[in-house]
Length: 86
Image (cartoon, rainbow, N blue to C red; front, side, top):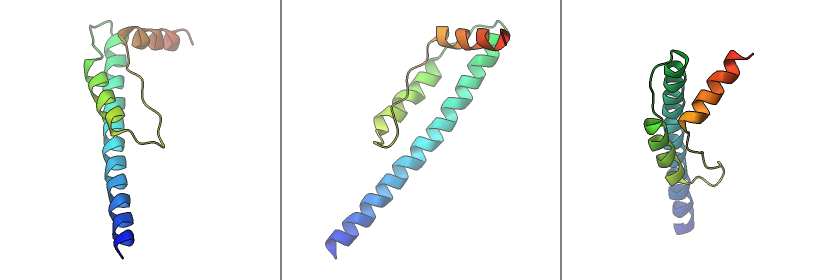
């Protein structure tokens, strides 16, 4: 019976970690979109909020999901330039 309870507890913890990761991933995407829009408008932007969330996601360390890379302003600028060249 103890093993069964341990498995249930482990599954619950994994699910909580996944839900937290998923929420952070959505927030990260929102911050990326904001940076892209500011860059498109030629306004100053930073990637600080993106990378703060990225680091939180990576600390969750779900083995089934690869670590996320930190984003640089150059990466955002390169992405925006690629959109303009299409």
